[in-house]
Image 1: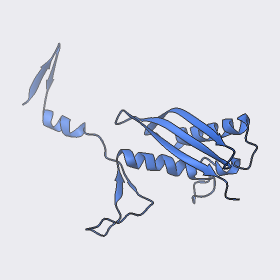
Image 2: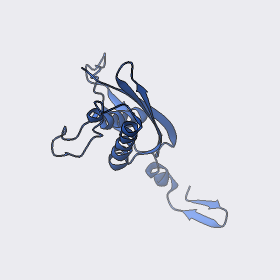
Image 3: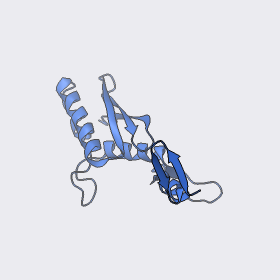
Image 4: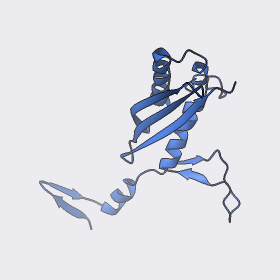
Length: 149
């Protein structure tokens, strides 16, 4: 098939090549739980949506200066755990999450960030709802920030 009529435009050329180029790029990431494949005895990688969700989680739990040669990578949320549990701390948490995802995760668009204060357990529940741009699908990640002492 070398030509296709679409309205007032004629598309010509190798359409099979155009279909191959337009395929979505697969995303792969290392699963930090290090699950072993039962047959290959190799670590099972995360693919596509799961890889992007894993990258978002890793960005949220990272602190400044934790990664070599990338001192500003991370949300530094653990530093806010020992601040008073008030609206200002929630706002700082929300801004930290929005900043790190806006700066370091171009594959997503953040839809909203919900922060719930659990004073009984000295923790915050952070839920980030986002849109994966390439797949045009909505997803969410939830992490629990907890004080260890």
